[in-house]
Image (cartoon, rainbow, N blue to C red; front, top):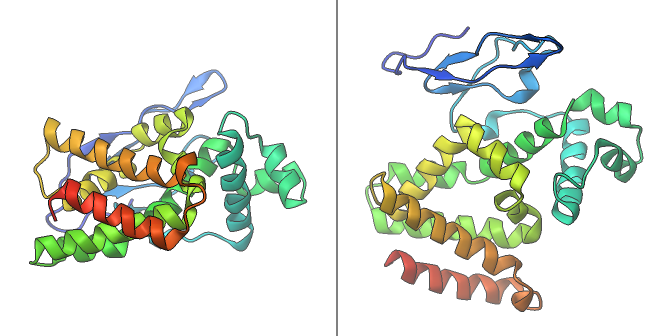
Length: 239
């Protein structure tokens, strides 16, 4: 296992148990500041030694075949939800066999986590810049613009990540996602952690996600939607 850098907390994260057959492997525990991707899970239920810094989803590399699986899966999940999408449907959409999909990802859970990692990774540079700058208001506005751009560019496809019950459960169970979202909305809202901050984050997140995918705005072009949404969310944030 890669040792944490100096100053990294050694408090351990409990990652639960992995069931394989009739046995349960011991809980997987990692130092705070690191996480493993589900792609590192071995058939035995154990994990390889590869570790990633928390928050650097963009450093996770995917093969061309894996990227094709994720693209097809995202389109299908947006239309049918996770429960309504099967590995066979993904294979059919790609024009390959189910075995070819299974070779890249063993379960839909792995695919959903990988999709979320990829989408959150698109916000990392803007978030890092917002956290590093000394001009809070300007940084929050730039970050807000990036969040809205991503939501509009993908419209319904990415926004399903916030509302599908299976995805919500997986995100709640996946420590790296929780920590990234805390950073993201902490930077946007400029508030400390607590009930009020979480409520503000939930309201802002829902406002953006619902607005870009609502039937009432389906015929509004991207530029107009972006302008209006920026104006309204700026007021919500007091910018």
